[in-house]
Length: 219
Image 1: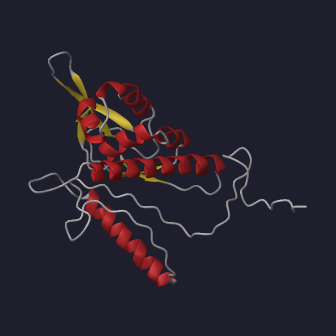
Image 2: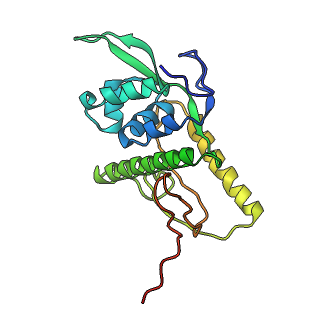
Image 3: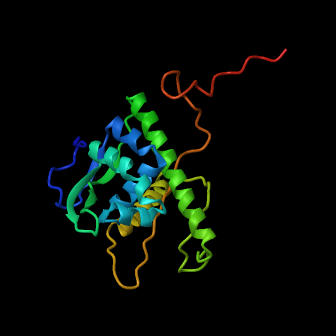
């Protein structure tokens, strides 16, 4: 099993925050199913079997084994025990860390792998939103709202941008610090933030030709 940078070796130690810079880890998580598995365990899942994760993400357990193997081989998940079942013991898995994915501006291959992983996260979030709205039980208004989607643009000065980032950090910390308990509901929050209108500077070999290349004049 590969060790992800910054992740300790104690499989049952505290789930500390870890910087993930490994390109292969980004590539593994660019698969929507693998991202869904990792998300279920890394953010609020604790320790679960494959069958329990399958129930959490709405997939068949039999279709997930190879994805778990890939995540374990990449060092993103660990096997922390087994529980007896009627047929054979079921492995119990845990995320190797509470990850913080690092933007590396001087490594184009890492940037493209990170972007593919973020696209996977967005697809995972959209799938969760769709399942919530289709089940007929989504709460979309009021203080008990549990299903929400939106896009908002606004002009911010440096102090306002700092405040926005502080609010996002507070939301993240609130979710990370939550524990299962009576009257509690598991909530997943996915957000993307960027300045719109930035030209696409991709170059050949890192995910496609640059989109901001001037178009030839039409005759």
